[in-house]
Image (tube, rainbow, N blue to C red; front, top):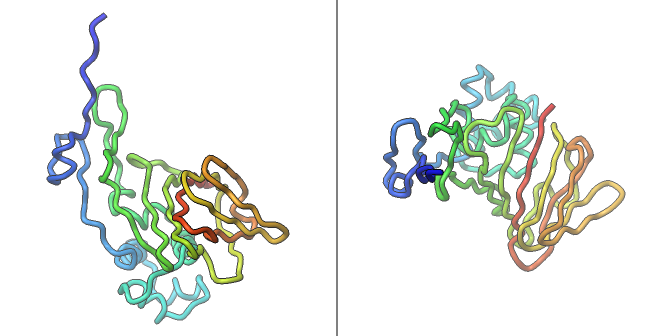
Amino acid sequence: MTQPPLADAVDHDAATTGSSPAGTTTTEPSASVGARVRDLRQARGISARALAKSLGISPSAVSQIERGVMQPSVSRLIAITDALGVPLVAAFDPASDRPVEPAGPSGFTLQRAGQSPDIVLDSGVSFRRLTPGSSPGVDYFESIYPPGASAHGADGLFHHEGYEVGTVVAGELTIDFEAERVILRAGDAISYPCSVPHRLHNTGTADAVAHWLIVHA
C-alpha cells in the first residue's frame, strides 16, 4: 500500500510570514477585545446604550470597554457575547465568524501553533481559541489564570448560557459554587450547567491552565 503524502494544509513558513497556500487561513493581527466587541455590536445593529441596558451597566462603561480603556472580566465578556448572541470565541478572533473551507482532500481543517491570537482580560486572565475553523454551537478554548486572578468579582458568583466541560492542564484552579468549593489540579476534569452560579479563580502560586468546552443549546 502506498503511503499517502504528509498532510500540511498550513505550512510552517506561512504561519510566520502571513502567506498561505490556497484554501487555508492566515494569522491576522489580534485586535483588542474592545474593538472586537464594538465590531460585533455594530454588525448586529445594536446600540451601545441598548447593550449597556441589557448588561445592567452604564453606556460609558461599554464605551470604555470598546475603546480599550477598561478590560472586561471573564464574566463580563461572557455576558457581552451572550447579549450579542455570538459565541465566546467570536471575541477572540475576527476569523471565528467566517466559514473556513476544509483544506486538503480529506476535508479536515488545520490550525498550526501560533495561528490563534490570545486575548488578555481583567486581572491578567488570557484566553486562546482552540477550535480550528468554525464550530457552530460549541466554544473550545484555553484559559490561563495567573496567581490571584479571578473570572468574576472578589466574592460574587455568575452564570451564563450553555453547558461547560473543563480539564486543568497545569497548576491549580478553584471553582466556587453556592454550596461548595472544588479545587482542580492537573489532569482533573469537571462539567456543570453554566446556569449554576459559579466563580473560577486561582489561589495557587503558579499559572492555572485549563481547556474548556462550552456547548450551547
